[in-house]
Image (cartoon, rainbow, N blue to C red; front, side):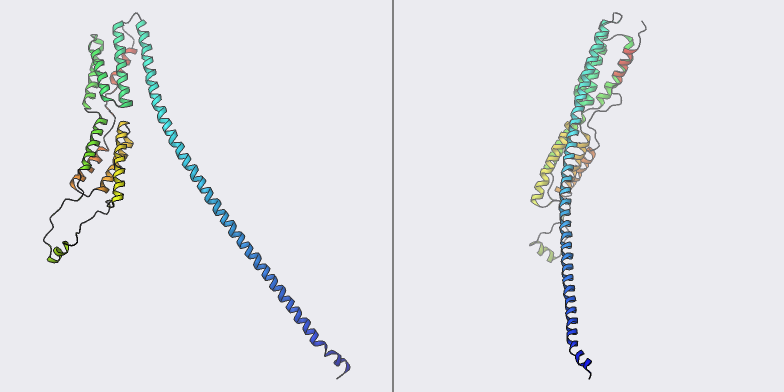
Length: 330
């Protein structure tokens, strides 16, 4: 062994230790980098979760605000509809007042005309005013009896006129009066009477189906029937006492709404209330001949009108105005 070899042998352990230390240092650095990376990834994931939760809360708040705005919009729409209905009624009343004022002005003007007969002009004006009021009563409030009284007064005035030029006017008035008399009863009065009969019929409807005598059963069925009573049930019928009480209260409310629709001459609301009443009857009472008769009556009543409608209504007033506007031959 040479001197150079003797000096190289002690250096190997030191080189190995340095290499080992370097590897350990590299491992520590890798572990530290992995730890820092894991913490950064965990922090990012938590931040994403917090952001998602915040966005979910913001979306829920935004949805609630939108729902509140929609509810406010619906309430405003209902108020606008009510205001429009009120304005429509006021407009009709103002139109009636304007027409009456115009008729009065025409009366004054015609009375000032020396070429026209004062008594005949006054009677024609009275007839026109009475017919206008009668037509407005039928169109706005549906007052059939009031319109008939006004037509009676107008007929008395026309009969007092002996002028042959008014013969056609009296014939048209007779046809219109006959058509108004053929209406019979006021549709609203008939609807109110039918609602009263429906309310009375509901109180007398049977709670159970009509009993049918069953055929002879075996001895063991007759013995079981002494202990257990078996009855068929309608799956669509309300059986719970609480639900039945609520349904009965709703039925009374629907009958009240139907009466209000009849009073207001509202055919849409009247048909909707009758449909709800029919549905409630099907739910509250079992199938019996009485219930089916009541249901058919409700279904037939839904097609009945609430206002008076005759083909000759207004024909006398139109001919009277045409006669008044036509030039005189004398």
